[in-house]
Length: 484
Image (cartoon, rainbow, N blue to C red; front, side, top):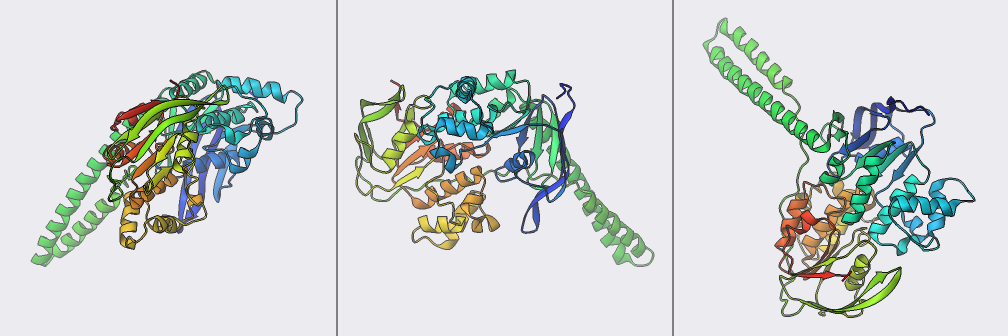
């Protein structure tokens, strides 16, 4: 294929996906040039991942046309590894994504793992890796075929800072075309040279040149300009209507003048710019705690961590009462998620949760949710004897309304699943919160609201997060570094 900077992909009035007769994407137009690094912006559930699936050919547009340069190879690094793939060995996993049998697959696996700064035995089962390690495997699975166009869907989820730095360096040096979805603003700004902004109100894509922060400023300035224009037109329309009423009462020829003034006012109202409804932010919320809790809620005297792919037991001494928050830290693959899971299901040796304590567990893969349940059923189930109106009001605070309430959880975007998980925690009223990477997939606008709720949580809390800015907003009373 040629190395020119011409367009390698374009959307020509593409419409896709109807919910209640409303398209998810409505006559979308944009183009991507060879070698560019593009970001897709938009709120949770707006259709960002859908655009990647349309490019990859997993979906077909209802109308319009998607144009790809002939022979263009496309690979996607998805948000999560599909359940069936988690049972594969590393060799079988990469064979599936390489797309053809080859005698030197072992060498190719080592080469692509080196690119993502990761080493592992080829016979190890995929599900045995941590969330951060699986994030690296997702990127490696997309790279092994050496595609012309790389599509990355939330690639920093579960990555520690070392992993994010390595990925950033890779993308800065990457000479091929890349389209990225991410809620990590600093990460995006480090390599982006253009933005595709998906407006959840108009269901259209606006294309901008520049880095991520520049584009955010351009969008904010445009919104302010549109609001000022609308305010001026609205003011003139009101003035025309008021004057028309005065003339109408005077009768005679002034009635005709009044009619023309009303028509002019209606024209002004119709001419007002349809201002985008900027991404909504979830309402401030608090997670109520279980009643009648006294004394110690949780203690841990030893834990298991992973070193050189082997489990090692270490001693510690931490106790949590009400209003005490524990942060678990350590690099990807050391066993943080495994420890949280064993704490939540009561199998962790050396750890003890006081009997009768209700545990609220937020898993990074949302596997505590039943994907076959509707959102409504999932929330009603955890809400116990709370009134339906209370459940719906709680859901609305997390932007879960209308059709979403009757949607199956499995059909939601990853970000929407996260909001459902938080709504469940509010309704559950737990005594102990166990949270594994609770900002993964979440729109960056929601993160300060979530941080405030966790900071103010008055039960006991155990948190894992690789996002320093998020952690800095939350009161932390104890830190357990698994690496020390």
